[in-house]
Image (cartoon, rainbow, N blue to C red; front, side):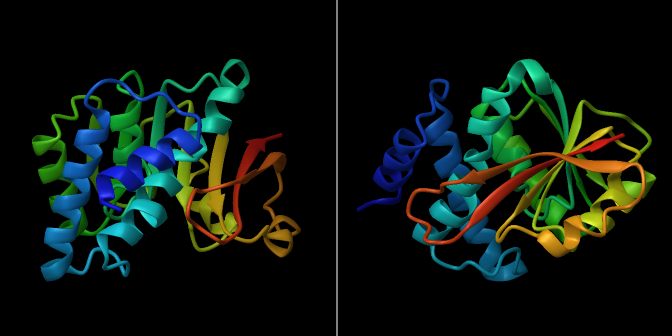
Length: 209
């Protein structure tokens, strides 16, 4: 199966409708990521077929939750904290052009890649911040992060950006939830199913009390 077929089938399995041209842009992003990764080591995932599952579909899976709760979440401006190679932020920007994405990453080589991806994929709805999250003064409807060190650290580094934080996790982090900083609570937990990925995935919605 080609990566294009793998991506198309995965999007269908997620029951997502993407705008015209989005799949082509996602594949172009994937190709660019694989090219840069050979030199700059942006991700530990090496094979493009694995990148489809572990990066593209894993990022797209959160849309099911975000849109199922659209009236409650009302997300128009989303910050991606510690975005690395632009995951999930740039993927969401391609999938949902109406979203305004702020991709925040302190590594210069990773933001250089993101800037190139923004240019090549014509992502007018994405802004790239080469700085630590603590230095960003803007506020957003929500902030999201993928595999951040811990929930407490996520709140510490990004809690000033929004009263709502979306944490993408693997196993359900019961111990981390027991140690949330005062003033924050778990508002919702959603188990995600990522096509082709035989591993647990969760999206936790954290809110300020």
